[in-house]
Image (tube, rainbow, N blue to C red; front, side):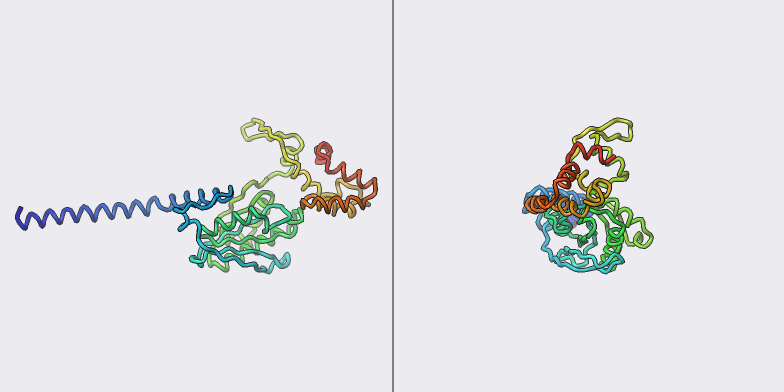
Length: 291
């Protein structure tokens, strides 16, 4: 092969190499975002199950974090919150993560793990404290607290933020996102376990049956936690007015999973109040009382 032929052959090889590299580059950019999202999800779910992030995923799903506790002004009062920020992505997009109705609020260990795992994938995650929800009460002030948290993170990031809520707080998050004052600051709402009809929820607690959209009935054994939360929030409907203030702290200690304090406070009740409290937390009575 003469010099001219070798030159043409080399040019064709170079052309094929360039085309292949361009094709690989195109396919990488086409499929990598979805692949990365899948790998992020796998890492997050694994951590929620107590599994470490696999070594190969650590560069994208185990970024170093900073955390800080702060207060956010709100028409509902000062809102305490915690912000998780990936160190190497200080301009990461924002996500407001709302705790469920639980006495530990933003300090609930599973919520902390969830928030940290998402932040380690490249998000700025804000977990605001909802004082009323922490005390097992659903109040309009918590909607305002959520809205103020949205506005604060939107102002911090300079762009719309995502809103994610868990369990009973799902309805509060949807209400906040629907408010004109906050809606323009929200890019999406993702609610896990929210209810749209509290009567339907109470019906399930009492019957174990849940009608589906297609007319079928799904049956399951409800736990006792939900009815207790509903009774505690509306204790005036379940206890005599004269005994509410005596029974409430005992009931609160039970929901806070503080058995020694519950026993201590229970011992201070009168025999009639003890009987009344026992009836309130009794599962068969809950089924009747919720209606």
